[in-house]
Image (cartoon, rainbow, N blue to C red):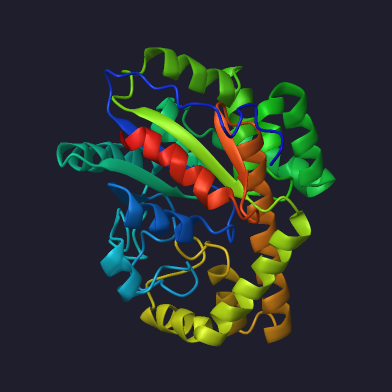
Length: 327
């Protein structure tokens, strides 16, 4: 993560008029949760979850939730509270997170927002733009293009008109590709432009946010961790966890909860669509792709202090930074 524009040793620049908060971001399997628990054990911080899968109940193993003993030492807010049949938007997260942050500040403590759902962090920092409504005719045109020439071609066309979104969206993510290109064709403006316009009109966030990012410097090491982590989840009973969700009868792969990495692949295995070995392979690949997208977000993140999670001094450096915020 050497591309960070901010020195690791830079003093925290925050306004004294606003309460302070720290946002700890990083790709999956980078060690965010363990680091956050270390911070709250040593400093007056409270954790707010920023993981769009860990909000769901009955989804413990595949989302990597901490166990009950750990949660007793380091409680998480916005965590394990929503049934998997329900949806939860970035807008809802922003509203709930601001309430939780204020509650923490009112107790004389510092909010520590931890997770890898970058859209939630972006919504919190920038607010949310009002996007044009779906246009079924335009969507049909994009789908026809994708069927004829592939989603790679849609990605190429998006890159011509909205390079910022194209950099963020993976070529194999048709849902987000379609929406980003549709927004441009309908409005004549990119998602980035619309977000910027909204940001100009959005009431100022009543908190000073310091962003800290962690990830292994070596991508191969992150890939190894992802593989080990996914196989470990299978050993802990991930298939049985998804079987229980499958048996409910009110869930399917169109729902955000079941589209979570790992759950989709295990669901397909349970449904008899793929073999066990294929499920393992696809689950690992999907998790690596998620990590790649998260790292891409981090590379473009403003004022991000980045740390190599494998360096021995990283914990002390982050603790020192967090201590300055807590003063």
